[in-house]
Length: 398
Image (cartoon, rainbow, N blue to C red):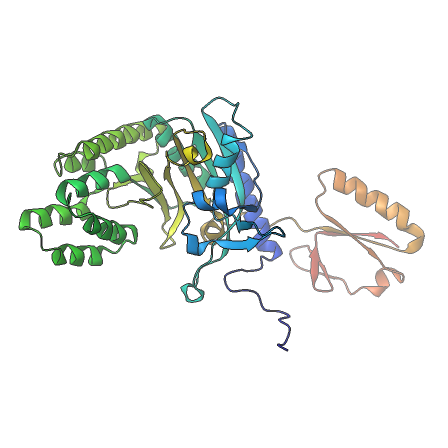
């Protein structure tokens, strides 16, 4: 019989101690308040969903889903994202609500990664969805809102990179129309940010020199508004040109929001090309090498739940933001009320008064021997310390 695992945890999950939890909740609350000011209302969905509905519709690869069986043998999944459950709700409980719908959320999600990948199997997301609006205005709104939310979360230095799935689909079809496998290979390289592998794949495809040059030039399509004009010269494909036109509109709206200095156009960014249908974006902190935010347009999801509608949205990776968000002032120290049994009621009454006002946290402690039974020190900062804990004040009911 194996030894019980007393202190160990499954790979990919972690404990959050009080200080980290306090910071996490501050971030979530600040972000949700920001979204509320933009007209987004919070929604809560269950941790467990049916595999045949939400699980299948999710953007997460099937092998990365946590699956389990209920007592009837039905396959369930632990939610791997928040967007698919929200799509289910929009098509059912909110089916009588007119579009557009603006919804926000926070929650933990679960993905099964290989043990050696070193990635979290459980992590936290906070985000928003704008359902029922296909316009460039809607895409720009979620990007501008994501910028505002990162600022509200305490992330100071970051950039948003925006791209468009349609541009790459059109350009690759234009240059590699009769080679779908080659198109998929190059998309996979771009999705994984493997630019070295992308160049090597181009060389191995046996293409003409002009086609190779055009495919390689995609890697240079990163920057400001000028990228739109450069991209228009790269292909004559109608879908690609329409996508660039849409992205230019998004850029113009972002300028009106006053956030274009936070944004760069990156046409090498494709997002999950089997899920996203239009504009995609990612937010990068200057202090981390991976995204703290991602989102985009997913117009095909809602029809899987019987209510076709365009949709766009984003998710902040709240667990990662914990690492880069500015520290706020530490939570105020509690007041300690010590009391003897004969004065218990009086002490508790005083504690209730402080807790109901703006007195902050209050800790009570029965001390049969009064303060004489405590080893109290007062530091140069004026704080009281006893038993390894610190208090801003000690009130004596002994």
